[in-house]
Length: 172
Ligand SMILES: [Zn+2]
Image (cartoon, rainbow, N blue to C red):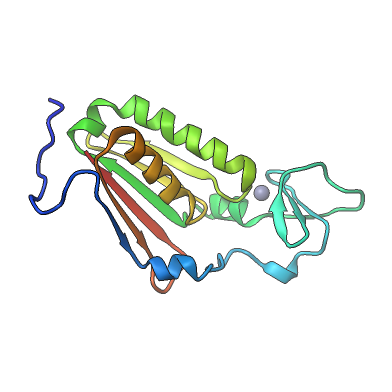
């Protein structure tokens, strides 16, 4: 194994970002797992403890009299149905897998402090790649951008047209 870049198409400069379906992302799609108005305020997730308050999930102490429910992220984790996927692959990715996974976990932890529903579901390491599954469609892009900003490489961000989904591929 070596660190050289391989398999680059000549017309794709390294460090390039290709976006697909961005308009879908900008349209503030709702997670079908998000029940919106169905939650009474305040509600606390019996899985992770997040609070539904003022129309959004947030971290905090449960207000007195909070109802119990299960938040969309915990439901996705239970159903093993991720909304987002990140694939990190290539010779460089294989050699630097441990650093990459550490960065991914740091980004997710930072993001999760602000957004309780943006979480890692699974980080699967195979000999060729790392595949990360998330509970939402925003975390994959954050991870991809953080990895690219730290290590260059090529980033490909796609949002599903007809479903709440995101797929990010980073190669180096
Ligand atoms: Zn939860």
